[in-house]
Structures are given as C-alpha cells and as structure tokens.
Length: 237
Image (cartoon, rainbow, N blue to C red):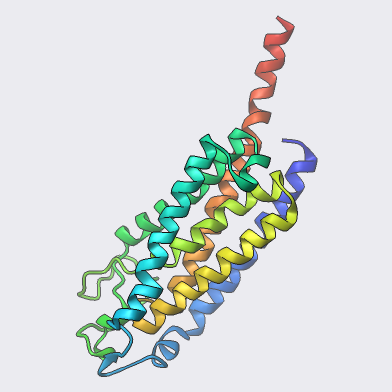
C-alpha cells in the first residue's frame, strides 16, 4: 500500500472515529425515549400493524434490497450499467461488502439482549427499559432488537461506496452514498414510527455498515501490496 492510497484511508478512518464519537454522544443524550414517545403511548404504537404502512415501509423495501443484491451479484458475472466500469475484482468487492454488512447486523442482533420499544410497559408492553450498553443485562424480553435490522436493507449499501469511490466516477459514488443514506434513514424512521426501534438502533446500523465497507476496502488495498514482494521475488528467480 503506497502513501497515496494510505492517506485517503487514514482520513476516512479519522472520519469514522468522528462519527463514532457523535454516535456515543447521541447515546449519552438519552433522546431515544423522548423520540419514541412522539409515536407511542401507553396504548402502544398506532402505526405498528397498519397493513399498507407495513407493506410499503417494511415488506417491499426488504424485497427490493434482496433483489438489488442479487442483480449486483449477477452483474459481477455479467456486468450491466455502471458495473461495466469496474474490474471483476471490484465488482465482487461491491457485492461482498454489502453482504458482509448485512451479515454483521444480523450477528449483532442475534447476540443482543435488547428488546424493542413496543415491548416496554410504557408503550403497552410488559418490560422495563434497559440500555443496549448494559451488556448481559436482560430486560426479560426476547431481545434481538439491536441494532436495526430493517434499516440495514439500505444502509448495507453504504459499504459499497468505498470501492465505487476508487473505481468509478466520484459522482456515481456520491449518488450511491446519498441514496443509501436517505433510504436507510427512511426505513429507520418507519420502524421508529412502528415502535420497532429507537433512533440509536438506526444510527448504529449505519455506522456498522459503513465501517464494514471501510475495513474491506482497507483489506482490498493491502492485499496487492502484501503480495508484491512475493511476485517480485518470483520474477527475479
């Protein structure tokens, strides 16, 4: 890895740490519950089971996300559209980054003991609020509600913006980034309205997906540099 490639990664790493600090500040602010109270009360969350809202804000976006990932995987083999501008390795990095981001959120959710807002006694459930920072402390519910899995249907695509930033026009990467952010925030807000998640769950999902993509980009840039001495040695032989 050369200095010219290392510098942008360092800047992105510093920016990622800044985002983490802001995210921790949000957690410390205690604003999750006040925001949840905007949409729910002792009777629960009015939009939780509205059929049209669930279809438009939950079911269809998940199908669309899965379909897009399959289309990108197909495009890694038979390039279409902007994928034609990417090398085969970069096309597969794009697909892998998105899939790994989704998998990371799934693993975090499976390990989490945090329950959803609609499970709290304050919102018509039976449980007391327990911060997701109290690892191992159960609230008596089923858990598995942190971070926001549904928002990852869009935020996972943040992980792909790094390879696009390097391999295609910056404008394409920026449009990709903006679309993933906007869609992820909309899906996160929809789940907040339904009582499925707090805002912190959505923000953590975005950060985790971004970080997975950055880590994979760093690995992708390091691997050729790591293999270069061996290649030089073989050529000399």
